[in-house]
Length: 68
Image (cartoon, rainbow, N blue to C red; front, top):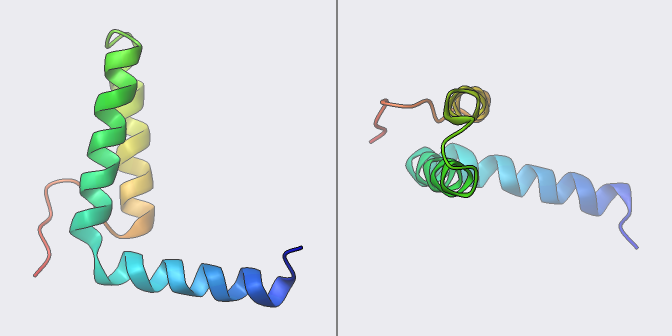
């Protein structure tokens, strides 16, 4: 059973990983975008791209921005 303390610790660890590795996050989002586009035959590529951009921006890993 997951208690709130464990959940809070997990969220904190995820935030740290995302903050320290924005390029990896962006790469993961790009791969997900490719898989979804392939499986839908690019029917929804604009919506998928927009969603990916929104998630990337929210996580601090916007498209086109490289981090040191």
